[in-house]
Image (cartoon, rainbow, N blue to C red; front, side, top):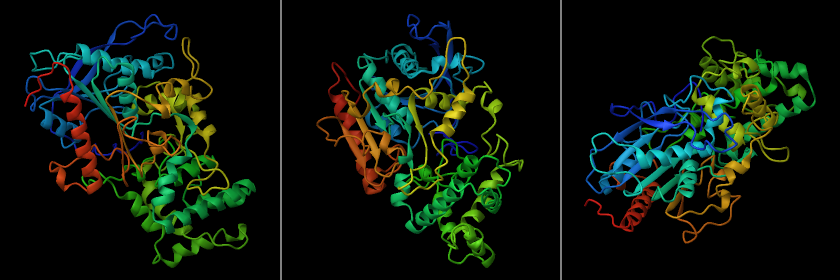
Length: 508
């Protein structure tokens, strides 16, 4: 899911250089549908990478769905679960860029009318057409679906797309894995913070909960002088909107939507790809050896809260000033390039980009606006952060066009209509992590019915975070036990599917 100012998890480690290829993709797969009233003509060049070094005639094709970002750099065809699939089954690996991401843009800009063609049904139709018609470089024999088994893999947003695709195009794709696939859409998603609330160092969590409660007390009492002093303590006096302040000091924790630092979501069992910034943050917040000048800050606002100190406020503010504020190179903290969101013209910029494309999907179909927990439940960010905060960005970013307008709130019937928590499809495996902040939008959500393999192939990795099954080791037996078990389960599940492929003569 999206971040800004730093590369997505793992992408700082580029794969070996490989050439990019391009497929001539149709812009509008549904020209007779009244939904696409502008009837865009023509095609665009959809970029992909391919790995054929493990291939033997008769082998399957593994299609990795890249999702909400460009495919430059780390292509996931090296040192990943896809690599094991290719090696084990003599297959081909393909990484396909989503429309409206990277260089795979149908238009020169991304106006509201042009983004009409970023609907989920158009996105997954791309995958269907590609699998049936693409001619992969260096492969002379027919490897197109359905005569060759094509297996999908996607994680997170692409995890949902993987499930949606095999449900919609079962005659094209033979199997699919949905890893941390967010198959359920809803408006506010405060559950994002639940694993942190439950599993992060509890002294850190308790301090932040208490500070948040005190911040919300100041907001509700409309104590403007106290709020100005609070902002100044964090070095953020320039932020005019209290919601922008609340979001900025929550960046080390995560979200909402945009965040410039590595968070709980970017923790990974594989040290080559994981990040420890969240734990560094908590270690700083709970530092019992902080200087007297720092700990004195804990008393600075006590006069507004009945004389009660704000435990670890000084540590929290010191970390934000040392780590978060320098990410704003200009020092203009209220600018849209930094931490200020209240700039309608900036949101309305129609230049194509990953953040704009993902925001459109969020605003129209998926939702999941990260928000605070309500009063009565512990919260890790101020309760001023709610759905109206994100919806405002949607309204600014996507004004009504000639052919297209966004709904007042996301139309979940489009997203949840594929199956939601009652999702069923043949040869579809759901893999989730029990500590994933997105878990409650996935197949193993606490909001979903109990899960059993006989009803739908599924596996919940104990203690795992977001898409923890993707980054494997060359030696699977050297992986941590719960990750290792998931890797082996996925390999044998795909193997069992391929053994059942009709009239196949898979290479051995």
